[in-house]
Amino acid sequence: MKSASIFQTHPFVITWWEGDNALEDNKSMEYDRNNANKARIIYVMIDPQHGWTRNVTSNESAFKDQVAWLDGPFGSPYRLEEYSTVVLFASGNGIYAQLPLLKDLATGMKASAIRTRRVKLVWQAESSNEQLQEWMHEILSDEQLDDDVLDICIHAPMSAEQLEAHEYLKNDRIRKKSRCVKIVYDVPDVEGYLQHELKESKKDTAVTVSGHGQLRHDVRRGLIRAEGHDVRLFELDYQPVYENKHRGGTVV
Image (tube, rainbow, N blue to C red; front, side):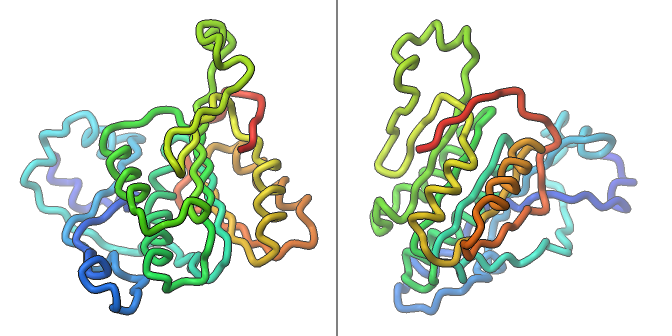
């Protein structure tokens, strides 16, 4: 690692943390929305661009036994726990920006310490990995969260050639993975999701998005058409730079 890198600043995404098990050990403890400050281990996502970030991701061994200085600013406080319904939209690596919000909301709902009573995550996945699956499983395996509280739809678009190779998906592209997770082999119908959630909520709703340009455009357009609803949009600090290559739309 070049020593000059200590004089550079690089914006990373804090995507997970460990060591904040106080709520699990003491259920009567007041919910602390800043519990990430007590973490022993922090995971960050590095989106390689040029220079130092490219060198780091191409040489993982250089990160072993290195000292890092983590400094702010740490992004905007969204305070999603103040909304009765929260809808999270992500595509590609945008899931890493949504994951800490999902974790924080799940922790608060588990402790019955926040206003939020329903969370919907819609993720157009490009790829996954074992670490991400492990984090998602940690959130979803909590039996204290009711089935109708947390709803996750993972969209895995398929090309016409791929659909030809999977005949059983032609008429039904939706597969239920677990009590809270559905896999959809099509791109998300963003406006359809928004219409459904806003209709069901009838209360204040927060919508967050971290995704490619087309996804952000679809979310904005869907909210413009949702007149008469108490809804607020948060576009997260991190947004993937690639563009969507799929067309279509399914809502679950």
